[in-house]
Amino acid sequence: MELFNGIYSWDGKKRDGRDPIAWFPGSYHLYICSIGEDDGNVTSFRQHLCLYSETGRGHSISAHPEKFAKHVCEDFSIDLERTLWVEVNPSPESKYEVIVYSRNSKLKEVFFYRVQKRIPTDIELKLIEEHLEHLAL
Image (cartoon, rainbow, N blue to C red; front, side, top):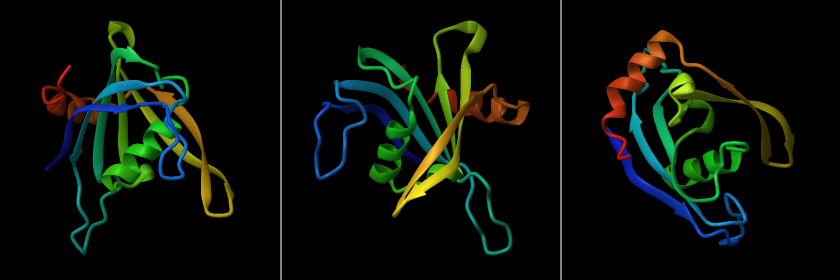
């Protein structure tokens, strides 16, 4: 089931008490879909797939994707740690980067994450390519 397919943008301003993704405006192509659901007997490790790529307009989040991911999770009610995050790059040598978020520390109710980027596994690559056609680039 598709949750979102379009341009996700921000204006760089603080709204509703939360910091912006970046202090400069930007936008990304974003595609979110469900890939696994808990059925009572089996718990799916990854429930959503999130493919995103730069539009070429505005600030890039590639260096620090955590705020982007947290905003997307809040806006679409998905779990950061149970989502397969994939950045689609124009470069053919590193076309897809899987972004892995691991809890690093906590301050009151806010979690901080360590971010690792890696190439997709064969199974992930197959899943990405099945859904890539839906990402409006």
